[in-house]
Amino acid sequence: EAGVTQSPTHLIKTRGQQATLRCSPISGHTSVYWYQQALGLGLQFLLWYDEGEERNRGNFPPRFSGRQFPNYSSELNVNALELEDSALYLCASSLDTGSDTQYFGPGTRLTVL
Amino acid sequence: DQQVKQNSPSLSVQEGRISILNCDYTNSMFDYFLWYKKYPAEGPTFLISISSIKDKNEDGRFTVFLNKSAKHLSLHIVPSQPGDSAVYFCAATFAGGTSYGKLTFGQGTILTVHP
Image 1: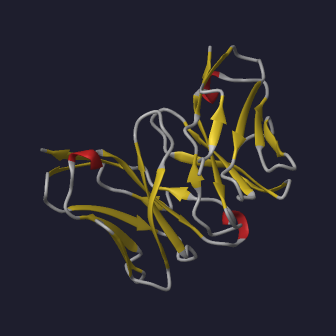
Image 2: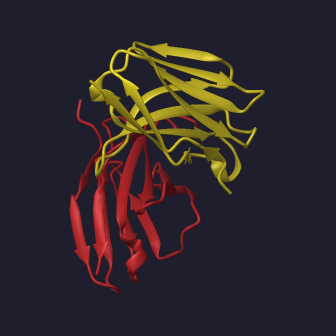
């Protein structure tokens, strides 16, 4: 069974640009979560999508947004990139909503120059 | 506000011995706890979880203990193997309010198992 996949593996952007990160959940999983791991910091919850709807978001500005498609894959968009957005962005999926085990993908390393 | 804390940044253990990783939490609403293992530049790998209705859960070499009164959980790895060397994160969640769907992670503990 394929795990959570993310693309691209690495992404280099300049300040002010927009970045789009993609995630495909484990087959059968309907919930997708996004986390940010900045250098020296822990994993911070960004967003949760379930059945195409945003269900919860962490303490991040509105320029972090995303969506979930009918096939449950998801996109994270970061607008007006800032240097401190450089981080590993992790996507996770779960079979059920709420308090369920989340399985993580390999991440996308975003570097903002 | 660090609701989940792993106070030991690192732990060094000899191969074959027990590794004990600790985690404390402050939010009494948390009702589901997980441990993940992570290598640099990779995503976390799920190891084991425990619901707040239990105080122990085992899976092979991994056992998680939960002490709700002390708001403390621990992960025991027996016997430890060099391949266990990684960063270990504990995480907690509950299905309610702003925590719904959100895992709150500790800062991680670097485990090194020496041959």
